Image 1 (cartoon, rainbow, N blue to C red):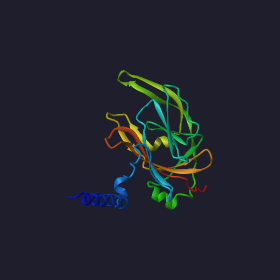
Image 2: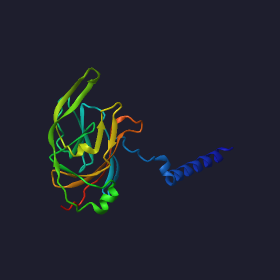
Image 3: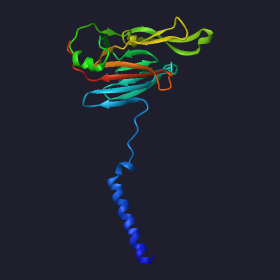
Image 4: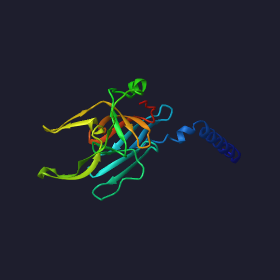
Length: 216
């Protein structure tokens, strides 16, 4: 092949490469992966989404900010304070609100709730002072470390853990809950799982609709 032919060959390769990068740009720019934890699914049009939380650590609270779609944590044993801005928080299977309240509905899916759940009556439950287990390392010796904390007793009903026999029996309530935020907004929450894909407990999946037009 002559030098002239080589020159034309490299020009042709360059033109084809540029064309391919334009036509098949999606091949060279892979779609970003979904986040492992936090707001893993969001649909702005329907105001719906899915939250996946790593709540297996008894020493931590995991805080959810629905308004900003943000997740934060605080270590109880290290004395870390609550973040400045959050709506509800998960500690293993415990739930608390940030000066909010909750109501349990008879709906078992967010689809049914969205169709008929925006104009029902009921009493909202506020947080009360309780105790949470924050260190289970000495459990086999009967030594469990507890701490005082506010909890929402209604939202804590999303999962029943029956320890009267071993292994414990875990039962989801299957209900949709209405969360009233401190600023007067409302959200619908459906807790759908307490395990991850490897069946490790302490990983919480929550489906939500926020905001909702709740009619008292």
